[in-house]
Image (cartoon, rainbow, N blue to C red; front, side):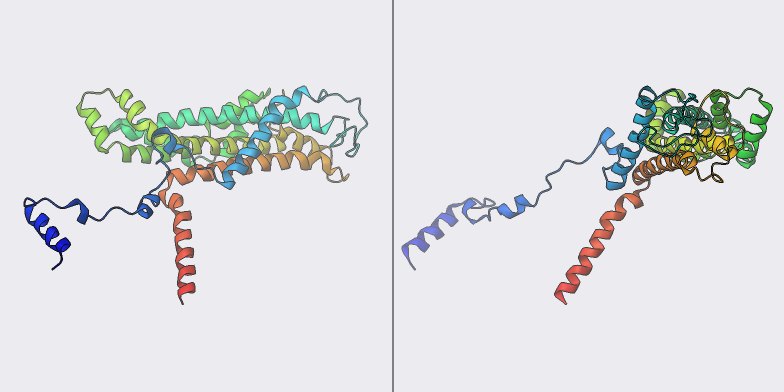
Length: 338
């Protein structure tokens, strides 16, 4: 036995029981440190924000374009009721999208129509969300006869056809302002969102933190506002965007039937004037295609944003891309090893 081995055995024998020699402990590898995740988990308010994806980016770009057109467009175009232009002039350098049968500039009408349609959509969506909160969240939190009464009113509104009711109300109004149309659309489109919110609130009211707040003596209003509402924000945002789409499409349908607002210009009134002016028969495509295309663009943008928000509400949609990548990676690895 060499001197080095003999000295090593003596040192080991001198160590107290249960003490490990530091020289014999395996040091952590630098490779394991490099494999640690670098990013921080999303928490708090950031966890409720949708992840930036290509479809979300496209949706934001489309909606921002419509908003810029509605906010700044009317300041950059001529009077939309100026009939001093040539009638039914095709698109040119002077009139980018031509003129109507009465000589109105189509670009000017599109800019003012964007403002009018967004006003109707936002007001109607706000009214629908407020009513859905009252009849959905409140009914979901309450128990007993209060929940039964609110649920009954929601079910009655669900079975009543919305569009015929809106048509009847609009037909009896002689002077239909855009505000009246927005209010009518709002009070006839809240039942679906209220039903969804009621089911979600009924699930949340049985959670431990809600029960703890109730046992601690918190008032029902504070429990709804502090404990339940933050968990409903993604769902409320999705319902609000859907209500905007429904209101704009509903206003366009009413206006096309001649029941739209009479005190302003919207994309729906443009379609009605194009239909009454026989734009399709005269080949004036620039009169009816742009407003229909902008309605579709806004609906597409809001729908893409809504899809991104759905990934927060539905965990299956949130985990679907990662699961698909794992399957593709496993299939690729199996193919390489084979």
